[in-house]
Image (cartoon, helix red, strand yellow):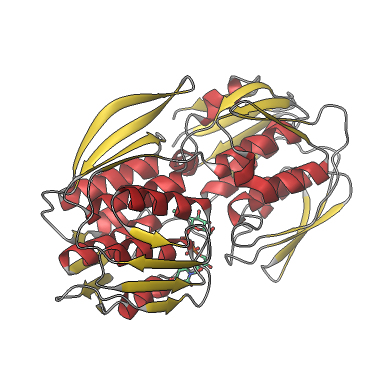
Length: 429
Ligand code: UD1
């Protein structure tokens, strides 16, 4: 298995191009199942999860053409043409679904267009139990009949889905996306209350509107959808990855460096920018992105609590914990979205961090002067990248094992960081 080896202590200087958002690209790709006509998506990141979704869609009969690379400020995002004209199967097999939780996003579109779908219960990052009960209850509210059998969700709506009102019992990004897609083809009006408001949902909604869907309340927590008989062809460019933006912004701050994040949007990371600013970063908007630095200022501990958007995102919690590990003073970090999302803590402690977790829900981080390099490994994507950040700041050599997690979510991670002076390389076994 590949490893990433980092020799830390170098302040990062230079430019990093931000890629398209993985978490927007995955539901956008699933949306092609809603139409007979071709959906063309550009600025797709080159990531393992995108390939997994492409395989899953191809297995259902989606024809995928790769139209080369679209120019994007000097950067090349991938362009896919996705045609759902000749769907040959409405079953998403265990082997394709088990590695990625977002596979469940094919359920709503398949059911809405074909009146049936059989999708394996998903796997994905090992962060808590992560059930899909809300996805299923929401589809039932639109008239679906759902059974669980042999590890599969079997959903039927022989006469098509019917519009309805559904109040999400808790904010769920994936369930909002699944229901939103399904409702575009349901008969009549659907109201989705307490919807998630993440920018990736807004991106999906905008693409669905371009495909002919009728959606009101985009960006708010109440989405109202008037069902239409069919959706049509559209072109859509995936929005920038706000978690990648936040991660590289943290890399600048933790190393005491100065980075230009090209293609980044500050409005997508307001809560993270607020924390980084309080910790001592200077942030300045520039053409097509922003610049972030911490060159002559000490790092200060800041408290934070994860919340649905526009609050501080759980997907940035591990990275900012790495930062707080080397700040002056203490920081209280509370996780409210996922259970068991502190698996990076023992690994950061192996590098010399002083962190105590209470009831699996909050962590007290007492900043230390220096971290020291060590062999570490992580069991999820964001935890893995937090160890890379810690390694960039640490004295000596850090080896991050199980790199496949990073490949699921960070495009050209080593190249982007080494281009700014980091001493980082991938070692193949
Ligand atoms: C998405 C993101 C993930 C991010 C998460 C929260 C994608 C591909 N992934 O994941 O990176 O960390 O949002 O911002 O976009 N829940 C239930 N039942 C359900 C659905 C969810 O109990 O049916 C719970 C989950 O276990 C979790 C919480 O709701 O505790 C939020 O999960 P959700 O917003 O659905 O996350 P994902 O869509 O899986």
